[in-house]
Length: 145
Image 1 (cartoon, rainbow, N blue to C red):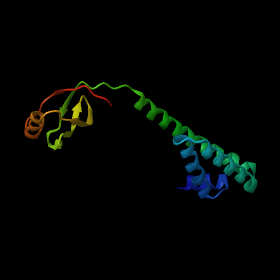
Image 2: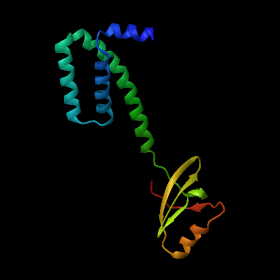
Image 3: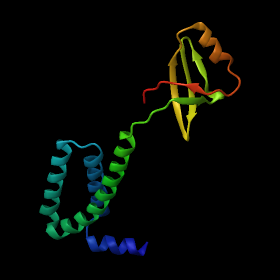
Image 4: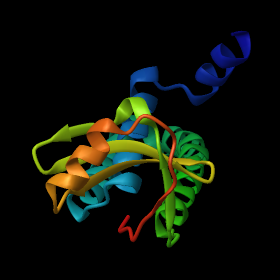
């Protein structure tokens, strides 16, 4: 706790400024728009105007570390969603099967992943099959993630 107090004394700015700029940096990275970027630049200029360049440079150092962490998280997120995942077989979790008219939904396992599945049943025979399913089965699927 004392280290945090020393760091805050070193920066010589109210804590609310750090929080304020951290939120703007977060939104700039995760929901980029030029409007947010312009708002960030104007805010930094106002900070320099009222507190001097020294305080702004110290704050920028802290924000650089925060922004770096956010960029790494954003990159990992982008990589995770960019992977093309093919699911060819799935095992329904029996207590999650719900039949609503011609729509069947359930959670199912494929490998180590659990997926939410929605399926439009073409026949009443298939609808009855899902309604009465009582033991574990492996379904062959053609899926779109």
